[in-house]
Amino acid sequence: MQAGLMFFITSFWGFYPLFQAIFTFPPERMMLEKERSSGMYRLSSYFMSRIVGDLPMELVLPTVFVIITYWTTGLKQSPVNFFSTLFTVLYGVLVAQGLGLAIGAMIMDLKSATVLASVIMLSFTLVSGFFVQHVPSFISWLKYISLSQYTFKLLIGSQYEAGEMYHCGIVDATCYAHDFPAIKSVGLGGKAISVVALTIMLVGYRLLAYLLLTRIGVTKK
Image (cartoon, rainbow, N blue to C red; front, top):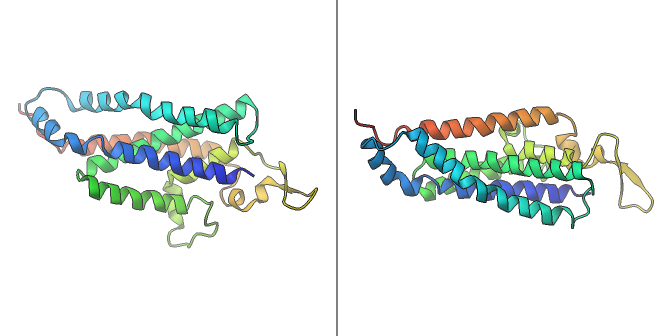
């Protein structure tokens, strides 16, 4: 079973773009406040240029990672499975980046933003279904807003289907993939719901970041 690998990919490519994105706005706060106050450009122009300008490096690194890792770790040697895994990782990176942008725009202090981001992502990771299959009820609701949980589900779904068998630890024994604890906790269904949830986060986090930036600098009329 490659569930551990899927979880590692989910975790690493959740944390990395998140912390990279946190450093987008805080260092430029003084410049943004000054230039917005003088009416040099619209906030939307600045926001879109920063987002689009960072996309190449944000997407190239995970693409190279998946290309190298996928074919060397025994995952399904099928173009369909490969591209499903690749697109899931890239989509998760974009969502994590959006969360980082929102946190950075909300808390313009890098140390405080980093601490908050760590707490949020660790919470999302713990309820994603790999380490803890029975999450206490008072925090179980976190899985519904956890980008890690939805990304992990899609990555698992890119490799396994309901009713599929795999070789267990016992000699010549086979087990159902959906009965494996880490897979059973997230399930193999609901891929469309996961995509929709990530899409809402993708748009919502960036919209939140933009709205938070409007409080910095007041354009003179």
